[in-house]
Length: 269
Image (tube, rainbow, N blue to C red; front, side, top):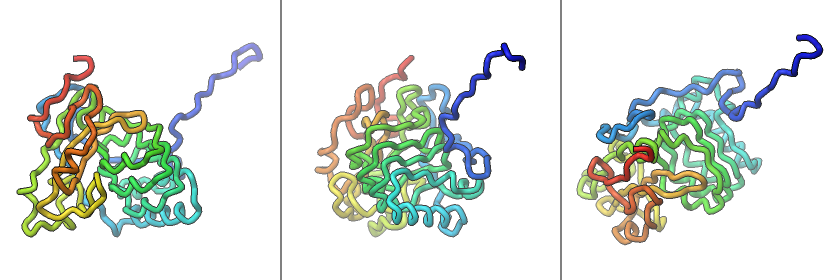
């Protein structure tokens, strides 16, 4: 380059959290739940059925990182950059201990392999920013995230979400109270059927949920800067009735999902 040549333009990496300590991109599985690039209103969608391997190296390292963050009161929690590629692949959810991260203001989960987030995220009372961008296997969030009253900014890959405004993929069909497992136990559920492995408290009133009293519904609400599909696990029909209206240009009422759930057309259709 001679003296008269312009300086090369350098662009900052907007998402440095996508690179781990080994300099490699964060690894995640591919997702084939529905086409995230075109409209398929009759797609057969469902919940991810994977269960977290709590003996894996990635999970054990994540538990330690949560403990460290809770102990030092940090305001940003960006755990995946501390994990190796295989450890990142191990992690498909977050531990319930994230409820202890009450000082965290920014939760970074860029490019994760997550398929679900636990309701304990609602206890992160100082959370202001939520960034699970390019977590393409994360299709929904727990209703409890609405308890994060300070949450004002989010960066979510909306095309990966159930019912998103771009492609309107359907929501998984939820089960009714009559389909709760024999005996009404909610402590050992099949996540492919129920979206989670256990339900203990109501998403709305935080009271206990007892077997046959479980009421599951979908609702799409504005959370921070995105419209998110939220799964509600309610203890009663009264708690379902207390839910707010759905976001504009989304299903206006809580619903059970499936093809029967009426959604507006995709934004460009």
